[in-house]
Image (cartoon, rainbow, N blue to C red; front, top):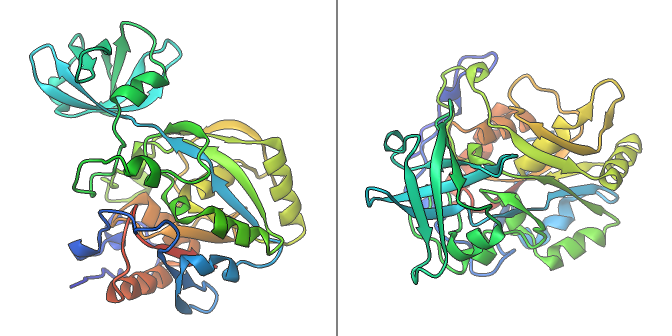
Amino acid sequence: MICWVFPAKGTWMTIKEYSFDLPEHLIAQTPVDRRGTDRLLVLDKQTGTIIDEQMTNFSSYIEKGSVLVINNSKVRKARVYAVSETGSRVEFLFLDENIDHSWNVMVTKTKKQHVGKHYTFSDAQGSYVRTGCIIKANDDGTRTIRFDQILDEMFFTKLGHVPLPPYIKRDDSFADENRYQTVYAQKEGSVAAPTAGLHFTDEILASVREKDCTIVAVTLHVGPGTFLPVRTENLEDHHMHYESYEISQESARIINEAKAQGRKIVATGTTSVRTLESAFNTETGLLEHGQGRTNLFIRPPYAFKIVDQLLTNFHTPESTLLVLVSTFAGKELIDKAYRHAVSESYRFFSYGDAMFIC
């Protein structure tokens, strides 16, 4: 049974107002057998109309001449296991590299992982070995670890596991190396997939282009915040983790021209939304190109500057992602769509079905 919380009329500012109960069997543990065959819930935010569709028909709902924005970040095999100096098996999630080549990590049994503790990272044969030592305990609960030599991508290729989110209750498999990655992933750096993009195939993207739509890429390396629930009661007290993004000069030009001409900007996923909205210059009224870092938390009464339409997944309760889509479409409308999705047995979360808010 699903239970929805409806607050009093007014501003939606406490996280409990974004809570719902979801039957466990609707949490997708694996992707559909064939990429691109997911279900698609089409939500018209002007009329409130809901249509049950298939992802293969996505292009039918995009206006001619629109710009589809995708996030081309690639998921790193960032979950790595080590043995501590006391013989314990410890799980690390590698977040980002510092200037001095140390790494910021999330680690299990955090309180036991203190400064000065050493770890051995090795393959099963012992032919590839790296050792590291925690040099700093950070205020946000993460640790900083320094290695005996500079790590390269070979470390993650040889020792890493696909960092599936915690609500997927199984070990990662070889299939996840392909399916937990978009078909257009290019720039390594995410610890979670930009999951709305997992629904696209080359054929679906081709059908978008056939409607005289342009597809442009931006990059936002997804951080651990995508896994984390909001732990503060009031939304304004929650602080997002910083994530790095990049927008090319050509992508910014295409998007700015489309906005000036009144054409729709369609964001693929909340990561694309946060990238575009973070890079908007309020003084010039234009999207700026370049690199940056953002901790933008989109919540009411945020007014969207760039994004007109959004392809997204169904998100976890009490998450910043659910707050974002509720801000975009309206809280009551998202409640309605989620109730419909549950009643019609849509699949939820990273490997679940899609929703197009248009």
